[in-house]
Length: 60
Image (cartoon, rainbow, N blue to C red; front, side):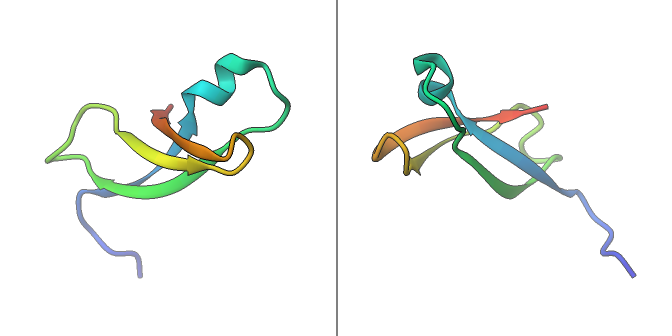
């Protein structure tokens, strides 16, 4: 049976990579508590294509 609760899976996508026009994407999957953080997540994560830390924002 699935767990009940407020945690949902979200996808984070790199904003710098999207703006640069380079092929490919940098995406991460994580979970968040939608009751504590109702707005979209913004985290600094490593982008392996650009080889540096960039801001990743929640999509959808």
